[in-house]
Length: 279
Image 1 (cartoon, one colour):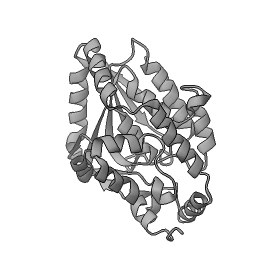
Image 2: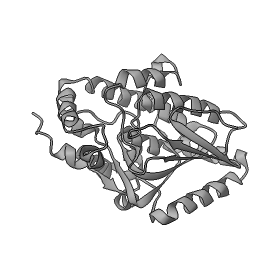
Image 3: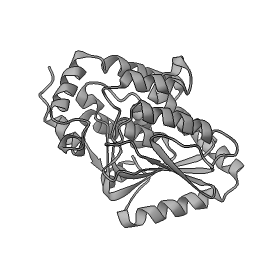
């Protein structure tokens, strides 16, 4: 049996744990979601935990759209519980996610913007619905660089030019383009996504656990950013997210329906492009 969580529904199928985000109205990353992630990662760090974890969403339009911009101090406080006050950031929480002794797979439907994309990037594999998945890093369009691993992971996966395109344009990327750039492993027809991910997860879960974790650790040693780099990105985000520029631009988005189930969130890349030009 697995623990119960407020915003994550879990189901164990043999050695595979399915973890589904359910945080109405649109799965914003707020203190409740972060609190549950901290507890879930603690559970997954135990030797007897699931070998493979599949993360998905109960909302077909939103995987994890981004952080709750009205609760940055609150979710940061919850993130600190994973590593202490010195690591009070989503970036370090997500780095811990990358290192747990289980294989993590994202089954992506809906929008994964900002820290939602960074959560997916921190997982080991990402498979997305060709018809119904969107990724983006909107932070620069609002007024701050990504602060939870996006700069580090996208630079490694996409290369310099494409990483800068993704980060500096704050544009939406559909699953086909994300696959071509290397943001995700594969884009699959929506009708095939569930079976493909389930088959992949069960296949991996049947292999020797020691071999899985040793191989993951070896790849992590080559590809994961150093803690100092993650902390620096997080500190810069925390500094700039409090700036007058972010307050002004976020305020304009809120006036248009930001953080509600409406056109701004459904087409965030377009909404950012329509904001008044910054000085």
